[in-house]
Picture 1 (cartoon, rainbow, N blue to C red):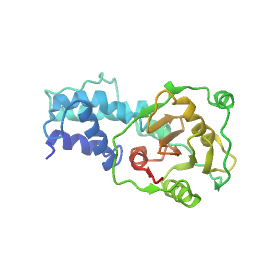
Picture 2 (picture 1 turned 30 degrees about the vertical axis):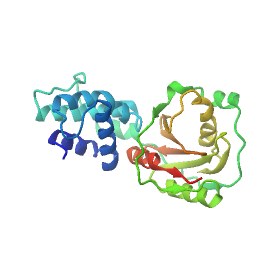
Picture 3 (picture 1 turned 45 degrees about the vertical axis):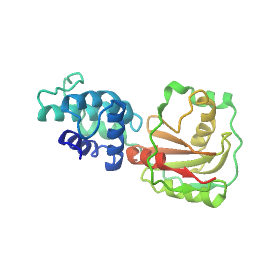
Picture 4 (picture 1 turned 135 degrees about the horizontal axis):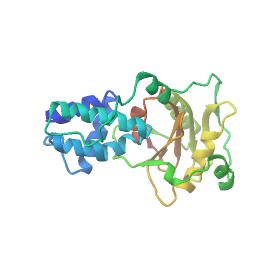
Length: 261
């Protein structure tokens, strides 16, 4: 049975991401530190918060907001356990105000219609993508989570399975684009705002960017949006999410996706 320290931090984290994502992240962060939910002390939890938990949270939201959320969480833990002070630097004022948080995490949603494309798109050349995006692997936040279990499996070798996956992911609030690529990076199915191929081109280029560092899940903060890419057995699935998306929940769902081959 989890102790009070674990329960307190898990409940606080669940106000930032979904309850399932909070539990998954916190247990994984404790495991990284060789600790368990049953025995972790307040002092040990402060080290986990500033270390592995922070690294996992910045994989699902902008680093500045992740640090702000955890600074507040660590301060609350210190208030309950004065002998376990926060390891974050003292802030000179409020971590953020409502206006700052809203402007940082919200982006206007496009009113353009969303269309599904069944026509395979040729893989984009390296030079064309480099000119548009101008970044490399260091700009991405990589994660390789443990199998979340219980995820839905899709037959992505057939159009019906591809359409089912596109529809399921498009139902998430704030998701503005979804693409499915084969292992070479060629887009085989997509649902993106009309006239926009940015997501498709980025996902198609990822096999080149990540060739030396294979990973099952990758996220990149593009400012107003976040792109997440899940590597399956044969295909890649890319999702473009706006600031209104619960990224913690989306990450957990992507982690649990499976492909039937």
